[in-house]
View 1 (cartoon, rainbow, N blue to C red):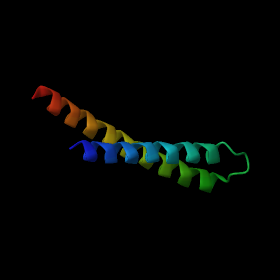
View 2: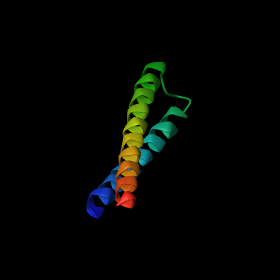
View 3: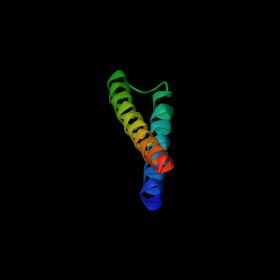
Length: 67
């Protein structure tokens, strides 16, 4: 069970790192509108996935602590 939670944490960290990288790319002034829209959508997907991992971990933690 702890290994599964650890794998989710790694996935969560990787997704946050990816979202930060996307934000850095979006901050560049030479990015086109089309590219910025693509990156924005990609960043939103990464953050939504990270949020899902966080919610899943919270549910598992709550369930474990109830026992």
